[in-house]
Structures are given as C-alpha cells and as structure tokens.
Image (cartoon, rainbow, N blue to C red; front, side, top):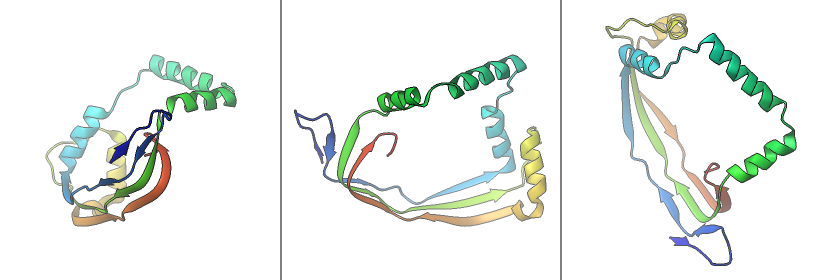
Length: 143
C-alpha cells in the first residue's frame, strides 16, 4: 500500500512484502567459461591508461564535491512502515565436466588450484534469513 502526500516528496509505503520462490542453479565448467568469454573484456593499453587517468582525476576530487554528487544522485527517499523480504533458498550444483577448453588464464589457475574439491558439487543449499524493517527511510540504492 502506497501513500503520496502533496506537502512531502517522500513516498510512504505502509506494507511492502517480497517473496522469491526457492530455485535451483546447475552449471558446468563449459557454461562458466562461456559466461566469462561473453562478459570478459580485453582492455588495450590505451584504454587502461585512459581509465587510470579517469580514476586519478576522481581521486584528486575534494571530498565535499564527492558528497554533494552522491546526495544528488541518491534519488528520492521512501518511507517504509513495514518492509519484509521473505527467506531465500538456493540449490546449487556444479560439475567440472564439459567439453569447452578454459580460455581465461585467471579462471584456469583458480580452478586448478582448487583442484579435486570442486569436481562435483551436487545440491548445496544456500539459505538467507528474512529481512524485516519497520519505520525506515531508504533510497532506491539503499534498498
């Protein structure tokens, strides 16, 4: 239930509840390698130098300016009378079987270092407890 008042820019939620159904994730080394290839980027030296200059410029920025920028980008605040995220349960299975050769050197080194312990992981359960907050003011980023 949402409440918007004319004299305030803060949106008020009386009751906000989220339920995520229990689910299962199954992956093998071929799938992990394909995901790394899709999202992995080869950064050229020119791009790396440009990124370094950008980071250094950010490092030299006064703290007051950074805080002012964060305040403006945080967005609108919301007031939650009752906020509830139900418990989350994930079943994870992983297999080293797969036909694809690992092209990422870091991933290859990591998996060889872990060795036999990661050859087969079947139905490992991750559980996260519920989150319940009352009378909280949060922005979209904080939520």
